[in-house]
Amino acid sequence: MPVRTVSRMLGDWIGKLGAVWVEGEVADFKQRPRARMQFLVLRDTEANVSLSVVADSELVGRMDPPLEAGQRLIVWARPEFWSGRGSLQLRARSMRAVGLGELLARLAQLQATLAAEGLFAPERKRPLPFLPRRIGLICGRNSDAEHDVVVNARDRWPAAQFEIREVAVQGVNAVREVTEALVELDAIPDIDVIVITRGGGSVEDLLPFSNESLVRAVSAAQTPVVSAIGHEQDAPILDLVADYRASTPTDAGKRIVPSFAEEDSRVHQLLQRGRASVLRRLDSEINFVGDAQRRMLRVLDSRIESWTNDVHHLLARTRSLSPAATLERGYAIVQRSDGIVVRQATEVHIGDALDIYVHQGNLQATVTGANPLQREESP
Image 1 (cartoon, one colour):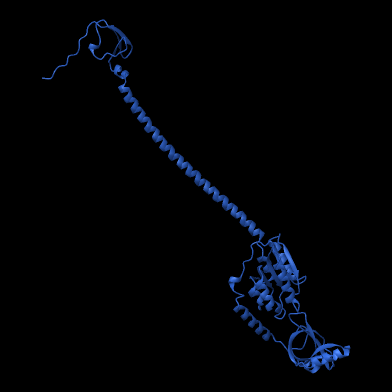
Image 2 (tube, rainbow, N blue to C red; image 1 turned 180 degrees about the vertical axis):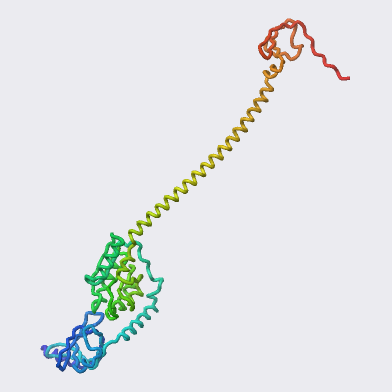
């Protein structure tokens, strides 16, 4: 079929479509004074998709607040296909701005839904690592937020390593780029924590960080996630699902790594305490050994003294029973020439030679007579 036929068929088919409510963000608009019609581009808030919109100048003029780029709109429009140019546009019949109250109501409804699913439960929060090997950082391009996180982290821990992904943090591409960066960093094994950060802004500026798909991606991440959005009053839903909420990018830089100075001081304190504890234990053990040694010496001295006394007593008894002691008391020992000690007079005969031992020296004698001792019988 020729182009004109296809174009006419498309126009006929699109012309049968009814009007539809369309919500999006004004991406391109410039007021044309005295023009009967005004043209603008309405883009999706979460995808890189846009449509041209044409509206009567009178309709645009009634807008409150005035129509401008970046504004969120709800448009009642009918699709039109211009067969001559082969272009599609929306013919606006009604337009109204999405108010802040309506945006906040939608966010509150989404927040309640996610809370009911348990995405914000404390038991789901993962602890941040004490000292991450590498830090994943998702931030705007050449942003102050990136500078604040990196500088403050390295002030505390100079060896901190970063894997940085610079993405759109505002506008139509923010949700997709932040989510893709999160998934990419989450897949790197040695990244132990991921920081998502940007500076402050209006509620509209921070809407990507309350997007449901981004929030669910953070909840599904295996790596702990820190939310570091520089806002004051209105908290995006990212703050609730993240494992840790930093009040500012600067605060995030201070939370994700320990302070080298503090840890160095703590190590020295522990070393000093350990050394003091060891010295106290050594002193205690030395005192214990000294006391035991003294007790052992006292017991040993006592036993030696007792043993010495026993030896003296035994020696005295032995001496008292020895022949020398008997001789010492004036007695003598008489032996025959064959060495037998004479105990009775009947054991010798006249003429036998005898040796007589006294205390000092000995005598030789010859038996001249023997008188056996006669016992007296009792009456």
